[in-house]
Image (cartoon, rainbow, N blue to C red; front, side, top):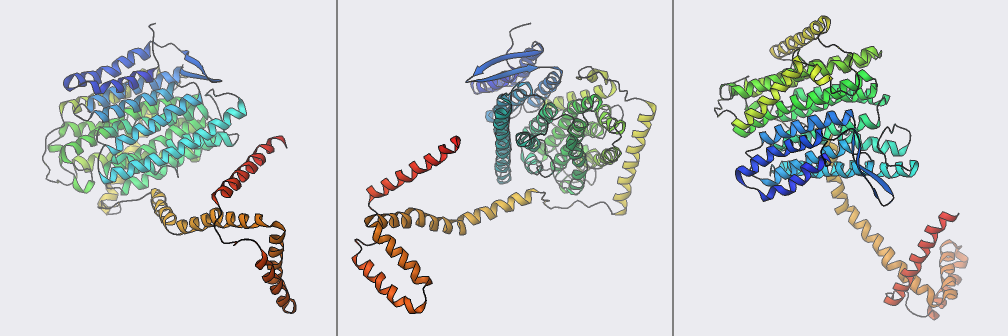
Length: 600
């Protein structure tokens, strides 16, 4: 074994050194960095490394076991592929953000404590945010800001949960948490937001399609899969996750089939695929967890292949809407072939990677007697064929001929897509190559006659249903429209909030300020000039309001006489010295009350 460093540091330090390089040296450096990182990673043995004390907390930068090793493999592989795909990008800042993003994701995967995890968690959010803004469009600026605000909220939930968890347990160690109190629920929500739980998912289809074509490969990989990882660490066997995951597999289908933006289709497809992973975590058996981890591995590859093919389309044509594309197979035949391989993989056709991973989770639900869940997962399998399996390659490369004639994708893009396509097919044909990396013994054989025949029949009937719905006009037609999801609420909610702050909120604050910083100090100043007589004036003022008519004239006369002899004008501004004195008095009173509660 050689002296290794934390895997995250290779990419993070490498990102900071990148501005020193130019031209071909930078390209070579970008490709060598993940190779160096992988070499460093495979020389780290299982166990705890880089543990140290910070204040009274024990922080663990590197904790290695079979689960983190699996994620380490795929994160290094996909980082190499994504950097190869993005070699044409001249903007150094994009590469820096991408490397920081990949390094932070590795930091989360190998973090042995919750504080270290949180630091890398937030680093992911801020580096990913730049990959959205790097598109430099009005839409990307808005989407990037919304992405950042949503993830800051999720980060604050996570931080609050971590702090409460520490005070409850006295430990920051990251392991099984379970849903057993407010702290665990806050951590669960923080993780779930990054995993695009239903109701917390709108940031994903809002932000991901606005990334740069190259940044999208990183975006579709790290945030959500890292969330799957932490959920599998902290909440395996949580029954609620079964239903959350099953819901995630189903509802995105209906958004995807009406969506005109193909990268937004892939965003909803991502949520659909995450649902299988979350369901596997919720079931919590060795088979389902193996299915989750193998599906993470396969999904990163075939989703990257689909995203890269669409990124190449944008790069060559500047378009990504179904209504604007079609007929590109004539100009980009190799890219079209790679897209079809990605579509076959995500649809779980036999001999492709999705077939050997997704079926493990579906099988686990059947073995567990979760019949409604099994039906939902099976229905979702047909649904993903309809949108990601057929719609994406069909409308991008076939369908009507848009008349666009362009060049094939650049060689480095084709090489990146070709390598990914090879891995999708290789894993599908040789599932043992992936199964050997899984954390639990694998007693599952995907290529049984019944499984192959059943899956093939299901997919063929799904394809026939798609053709029938298209020919009959029942399937929604592609339209030039913008479909809003639950992001409508926080888009409109933000507008209402700004209006409230600028209009009634401003007026309310002015009145509050007038009361607390003018009227109350003035009253206190007036009161202290003659407290006894002031109390009499206050008393007679109150009596005047509630007195009977017969006594009112007498009270008025008395009140007039009291005010006439009272020293000073009660409406005069308060001297600055008295104002400071009263402010100190109230601050002192507040501190006494605040700290006294600890002794009561």
